[in-house]
Image (cartoon, one colour):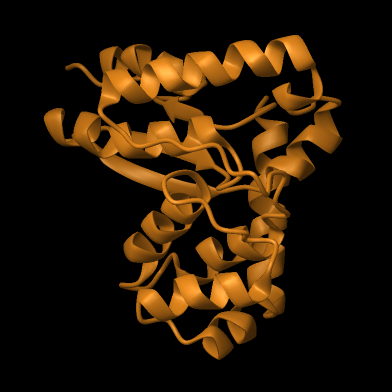
Length: 195
């Protein structure tokens, strides 16, 4: 039976970005499939009373150094987005909207890279439109999709469902019902995927 790892993510999380760059390799090594679950991290924070590490200056400084160490270890480009925080609501609705299409992988990659590899101001819809045009997605199609009631409801349901399962941040992973939080727990995720 093929194992699966569920990946709950938000583009606004640099640790989700680092996990995104590693998880496909881990899944491939173990013949596992990834279940992509876009969530709204702000909604999770609000529901759980959690907050971004950047709101605590000493923690933010430490975390930025730690992120740089992990990026170096992984061989991944990571640049702090000077436009942070970014309202990821439209971007995460986009992830839901394109999830069942052949554009999902390219969309997710482009948004993570535009947030953390080659940072752009994704609060600006014109900048989002540039990113979309670069990957062959028509911005008007994007806007129409993210305004659909079913897309809005699915992101809301993903987020509420995550909180109901004990999620308090991103990235979070589930393997065989066991929860793992943080990209620095990928070793435990991989261990859980072993036969």
